[in-house]
Length: 250
Image 1 (cartoon, rainbow, N blue to C red):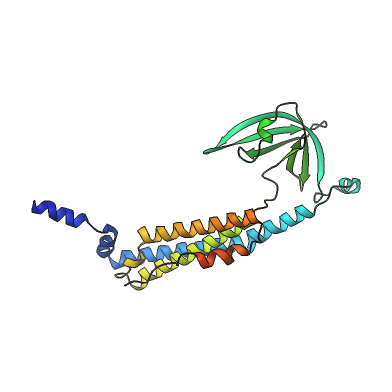
Image 2 (cartoon, helix red, strand yellow; image 1 turned 90 degrees about the vertical axis):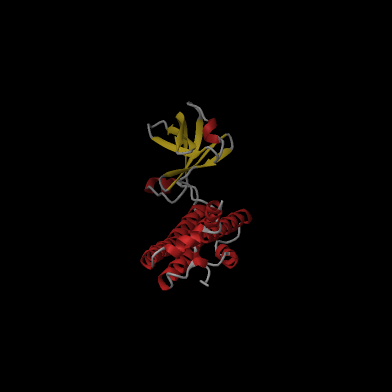
């Protein structure tokens, strides 16, 4: 009976804290170094998103919105910045699986023998999955890519069309910044005080913070897309509402 009580007492409480007590300072500092490396990688990802990916996609979207229909002169000069319209015939359609999802693919040809392929996810629109061989469609081409396919007044963007959801790009950059801050705090505490970091345990504290910050960034980005607010509103709203990056050891 006494042995049973001793075992029950030893398994009660927070095992991760006891693991932290038994872990050697060397292993703790090594874990801190890994967390700081994760912080640097996340910071680099944040920089890439906010300084390159987001501006590049924004500029591409603006160019697409400003593009006009190709004139006969533009066609002769081979311009790709204008919108050209082609009348194409569906050669074949196919449903394909990509991981856990699926997408539809359609092979299109014109009267001169040109052949192109467009695809779209199963949830992106009904047009591609309703097409059949022999159907006539209208394709909008911009910068060498088919960006829109339409038939009988129904239009569907292809993955090559510039996305009008740049707020989600900004949300990804903000989440990378928050992850970088959190990983840096957790790692720095392990390096500075390897025997006193129990308030900065990655599990469950770090996982909870990570989940909260991801939910905040995703929700703010999605809401910004629905409302149509500028991309700068995403960090302005998400960062003040994010959970703190870590605790202070007691």
